[in-house]
Amino acid sequence: MDGIIREGDLLLLLAPGGHTYLLPAEAREFHTHRDAVDLGAFLGRPWGSRILGRKGLPFYALRPTLYDHLMKVRRATQIIYPKEIGLILLKLDVRPGKTILECGTGSGALTLALAAAVGPEGRVITYEKEARFRKVARENLARAGLLERVIFREGVREDFGEKEADALFLDVREPWELLPAAWKALKGGAPFGALVPTVNQVSRLLEALEGLPFVALEVQEILERFYKVNPERLRPEDRMVAHTGYLIFARKVQER
Image (tube, rainbow, N blue to C red; front, side):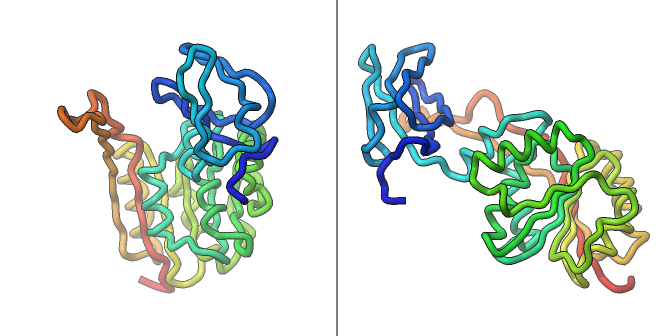
């Protein structure tokens, strides 16, 4: 990373009107509904450079952040959003070198964040029964340069095939069915997390957790509101990102 845009680099193109696009840097013209720009003009320039389009409107080439990769994943399923992912990473204590289990890969948004957090010495083992979802998730991870940190496996029935995992997260329709297997896969005292979309599922999962050696149960919902970027008329956006799911956290113990 020498600060210069090279051919093949993935760039976040900030277009007129605030729209963003995740694109490879290459010699071709890219069209938006307001203007067109020669992407090749960014090659050899520093990140953050501005190029004017055919109509004279400005385009900027930015180095993609992890947030950008998450929001631009190809979606075959609903994704877990950054507003939940940040808390998940902290509650599960995801750090470099750790082994994290995830069940319900989907499009791989959370998988991508986990892979970034465990670093090159850590590993993420993700389970997904649908082959088409695994394919999409692999593509998303490869584009972000994180595929080598992830091991893909098919769905779980009675056992994760792992012991002494540092943390485990479930994003499946009936997470309570996998709790005994999750308990067996985790280290003593390790954190457990799950996401479900309805309160009925929360209730059933809590009942199941209370029947097993898990403690420190928590249920959270995160609401997110953006503001209009106008210092003279600062007010909330007309729409907000409200309910996307309920987060449940717990810790494994040897006995209750």
